[in-house]
Length: 476
Image 1 (cartoon, rainbow, N blue to C red):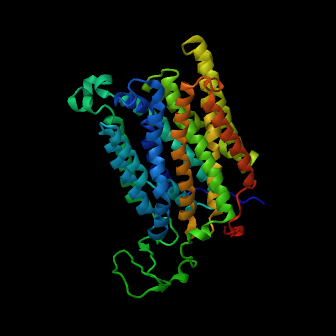
Image 2 (tube, rainbow, N blue to C red):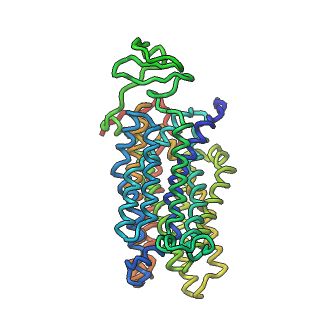
Image 3 (cartoon, rainbow, N blue to C red):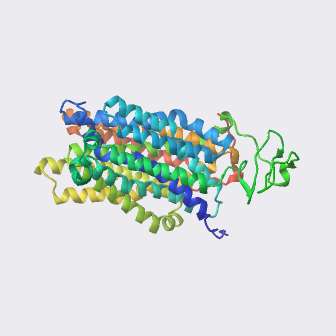
């Protein structure tokens, strides 16, 4: 018999979701203007077809450096708690976005994006925290909000990036000064940094530790391990006591953090493989779409911002209204496979748009209809994230290995996201240079093939996530 769903712990979940929103805002605020920024830095000598190479490099750097450090941040959160590492990550976003907005050279942009990835390990840790404050009855609903807040952030961030870049020209009555003329992209970047700073302050005061070893036990009482099976307690208004109570009298015994070898179970590897493939096809679409709109359809940054913002808005509405019902109706793996299939459909739309634009030389109603189809497929694609998080969470060998498990998953996802933008945009630029190869559509054949492989790989996960008490411990 299905257990009744327990209410979500909204006080803590809402704080975590707000903190999570800072990352999509920082990640996507540059999308509408990054192609224009590369042109203004004279990296391509006026050749629009080469813009994709440099845009892909910039977008890949964040995820490349994140891949190098995210596992270490996850393991650190297993040792010192989730909260301090989350606050460090938000502080890194503040610093990197301010640096990006003030950069006047390509190397400055590169360093800023690399810094953002290196200092930010929040994605995996946030998932660990959400898993720790929920149970089996409400975990699916809680995880469904993670992609939702990503698309909430990516709804408004591209609009901010598109409309507030070059404020001296677009809003001269407020920003027609030398500083804003010299730093045309600082305003959207500073707004992103200010939001990350706000989230870090909010988290510092309102977020309670979620790690089971460091969790708040009672009002005014906190627990921490002192290297043995004892705890130190402090009550409001009383000094620390040198007399410790046995740990088992307060909580169940907690195993020490799991080493890397013990994390390599079949369940973890299968979950991570599918998460990595999902991240790869997703980031390829995210990276390709703005470049495609800017170079093939000649959209302005503000128009690109509206397009990306609309995708986020539609996704949010559909997720709220339909996801839980579809999850119950179709099942976990079927939702995942449906989302991957939607990516294949999106990639198939691009050559149709190119053919229509080549034929008429302008954006026709049919092109707007095809772009609308990409928008409508977006929420179906993002549902894959809702459910793959459940598999990764269920695959963790123990509660104390949750941060490391999500760290491994995020490392693989970050590697995929580092490879994706540079590869997709480079393949797009190469295809534009070589129309003699598959009619200039080579990039879409490549992306379609990768997506088909991801569909077959999804058969390796079970129909529903593994029960927590039936974890396999197959070491490779």
